Image (tube, rainbow, N blue to C red; front, side, top):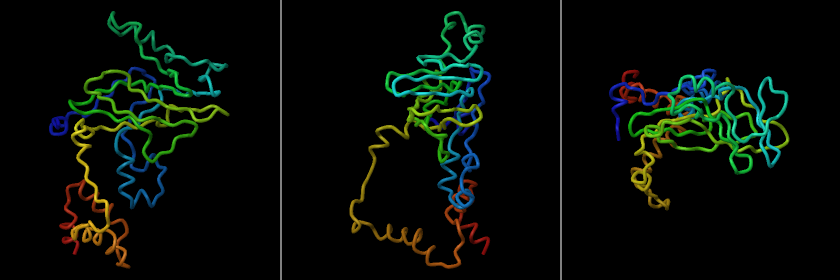
Length: 264
């Protein structure tokens, strides 16, 4: 696995914006854009770490989708009617793209929206292209711990963006037919997360073990369970959020045991 991007400080991912109106990707937020309960933000490092893992992608404009159970229609500000959706370009992008692109590439601007053959399935382009460091990929997924506005569900996909320099899009399935589904340019649409390719290879994922019986837990397993679960709950004066404190200290390179000894 290549770690040069990490050891040299070079970017793990570089986002290229092709739609100038699109909001640039942003580092995902530990509070899930301020939506997590205060107690979760303060004490649950598992939730906040997952929320902050990756970057937010935004729709490049405000628009709405409407599915009648058979066909998909779309609409945006300034357009009075619903437009049948097959494949739609972002407004005025073709002219801008062709003015900059080399001759062999003119006329090949990526579509903004594409209706797939499957019922209610739509591909939405973020306006970005991404390039990752060698042997790194991007997982495109729904927002972590940040509920969507409803009416659709995102598919997940892993893109080998060190090899594939193309539109960074997401696929969504519309789930309602009774009213439009609205997307806003200032609200995250998807989350992308960096993955070393070795992480999801068969060589890694086939290395799984299972302990299928309670009697098979070792003495070390029981002692770890006691340390993690039993002792904290038997201490009426225990500090709340000990896991979160220890995890944050590890991220800062502080040994939790050394910190505890210093405090004592």
